[in-house]
Length: 263
Ligand SMILES: [Zn+2]
Ligand SMILES: [Zn+2]
Image (cartoon, rainbow, N blue to C red; front, side):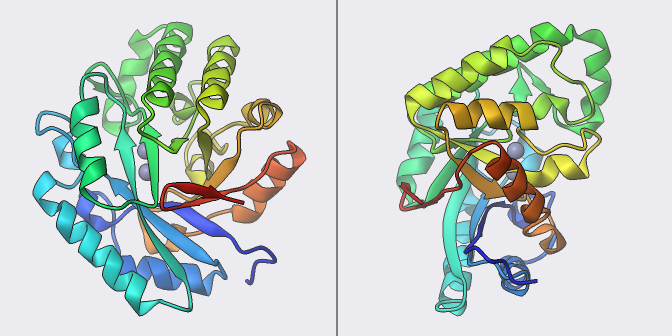
């Protein structure tokens, strides 16, 4: 299928994170086969050793990650634009570490994601039972306060998978915390990762939801398309549906190169 628009998939993982399969070259080939104009690898960045260690590359693997992406970039030159990014974590107290990693290489695009509430990796299927012990409204308020913190650091280009706690079907019973977070995202000049992985999860909805897509578009927050692929088969997943949802909301799609936004 050839897309009528020059689309980028700007949220892709590699096996260096320990929970993805396929080589970076296979992701690039899948993108080319799907008719995409480009991709941006955004593997989970190294974090301090005590944080989420099994789910990301170690600090000593960062150069290898950069080298592998650069190789694919050279191989696909003129056929597919290949960019180098990271999915960074926002976890209060780690900002200085993150800043050091971000200054170590020339990144095209950095997503800022919240995957933890305190010590709880709330999007990890292993720990889903914890939702039963939580007050959902309070959980979402705490989560969106962290999203606001992420937006205010100035370290990131976009917010990853905005309404992620809905992943296993635990929906936000309120909307005020989400809308307030969108105000902060808009003020801080960030984009949103329009993340189609939610359509592969029990939530059966992309991140963000149609309602939050509209609220973001009203605030002139642009969207960066991403499949959050952890296998090459997921590259470009449901991008036609993603575009439809964004266009119906009056939103626009952008990409990043050299950490600069492009229409
Ligand atoms: Zn993520
Ligand atoms: Zn991801």
